[in-house]
Image 1 (cartoon, rainbow, N blue to C red):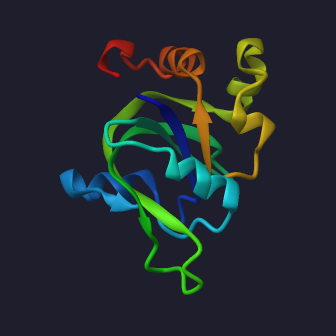
Image 2: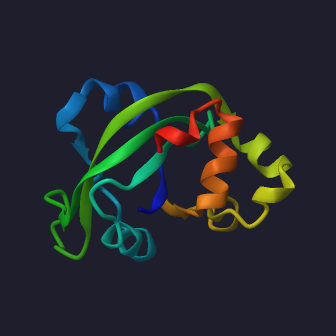
Image 3: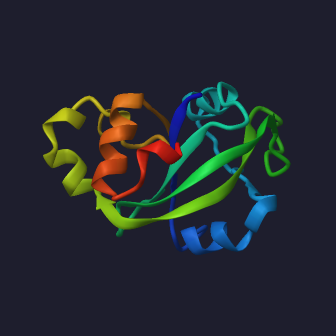
Length: 142
């Protein structure tokens, strides 16, 4: 199992939008960066991720599960990029801001900080556990 972080502008696709899709989930489409697309190619069904509101909020707001592996993105006319399907799992009891993440020295090499522009980044098991604790999420659930 691997862990990921999915960034979205809440005005375009919010945590509430993701939650509203229920068990069927939603395709994580619109990614037009090769590195982010390559990250999605590595995803397997059952992987977990954080759902992160970018732009003004800049915070982890929930967790998701990959329920569909990499496939063509129907919104990409060039046919170069793909998507995965994710479903909402849990709203974070405590949202974790980017400022809090940056303030934690054990997260200094976290991909969200190192590659801030990527919309999909890997999360190490160590970072996943730290961030779950910061968000008051049960590590045992994941």
